[in-house]
Every structure is written in C-alpha cells, then in structure tokens.
Length: 227
Image 1 (cartoon, rainbow, N blue to C red):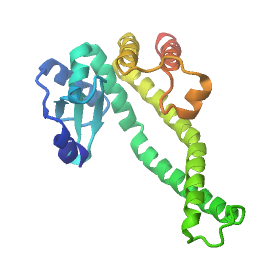
Image 2 (image 1 turned 135 degrees about the horizontal axis):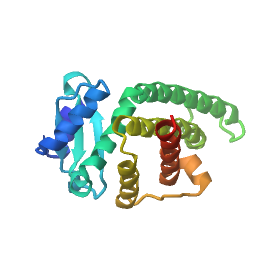
Image 3 (image 1 turned 90 degrees about the vertical axis):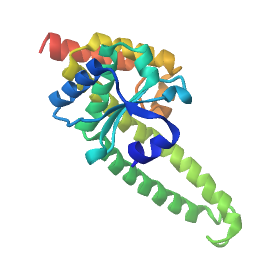
C-alpha cells in the first residue's frame, strides 16, 4: 500500500534509468534469493537533504526505492551496499519480528499503564477511573511507561542493524565501500558518530556509526580474512 498508493502522493516516483545499477541490484537480489523486478527512484530532495533507500512492499508491489539524494552523492558500490543492508533486513525477517515485538511491547505497555493507573488514583485523590480529573494521571503513566520501555525495544532494533550489516558484507564483499557509505550517511544525515553511551542505549534505534564500523571490521577479520 505504502509504495504504490501513499508515496506517490508526496513524491515523484520513476523507474531507475541507470541500467548498470539496476542490473547490479537485480543480481544482488538473485544472490540473496529475493525476487526484484521493480527498481525506482524518487525525489527525496524535495523534502530533505538526507539520503536513503528502501526495499518495501509485498507480492507484486514489492520494489526497491532509491532516493535521488543517494544516487547523486554515492558511487555504485556504495549504493549497492546500502541495498544489501536493506535486503538483509528482509532475509532476516526483521520486519515480521519487529511487528511481533512491537505488538508485545504495546500490550505490555498498556498492561503496566492500566495497573499503575488503577493503583495510583487514590494517591492523586481521584475516586473513579472515569473522572475527567483522572486523565492527567493516565497521561503521566503513559508517558513514563513508554519512556521506560523504549530502551528495551531499541536494544532489539540495534541487534537487527548489526545483522543486516553483516549480511551486506557477506553478500557484496565490499566492506570498504560500506564503511565509506556509513561515514557519508552520517555526515549527510547530520548524525553523531559517537554519542554518549547512555544516550545511545536509551534513545538510539541504530548503533552509533563508530560501533557499526568496528563490528564490520571485526566481522571481516573473523569471517572473511580468517574464516
């Protein structure tokens, strides 16, 4: 639904004209046993200077989307590693896992909010759950519990990013291009290469770039140079 009906409302989406890059992407997908027929580019520069790519959709709507900001500033090898990372998320079933984990965290969050809400009403001198004056209490617990659950969700998300990075290196063998890409993406997207450890643990859904680069170098050393 999103790539076919939603994105075209905001961006101009056209087939990728660069045949060499398209062939590389299709070949990379074949190696990963992923069926890719549609490769498109969209005018991401319309709304941001950030660069990005995605592999999205289901069934016949499945397609590769490349932002024009990515195509303008990155080499073919670098774009290929970005797509390999996205294919890694697909092959590792991270989308499905995220949906399941998101559902679990949502129910768990609502359960905690409901319990804390009920137990704390008397402290705030509220007699009934349905009183209007109880709404600020509900909002308070909703904010606090959601904030406390967030780091645990981020831990899982960061683990998925490491797995997708490893897949990108395995499938392309172009770890140097990927390392360059991570540096360029950080600069272009105004990211922090080495945030404070607590800030990263609490707020970041992706590992810091320096940690990702170190993990990639370690993976190459242990699995490619010395298998």
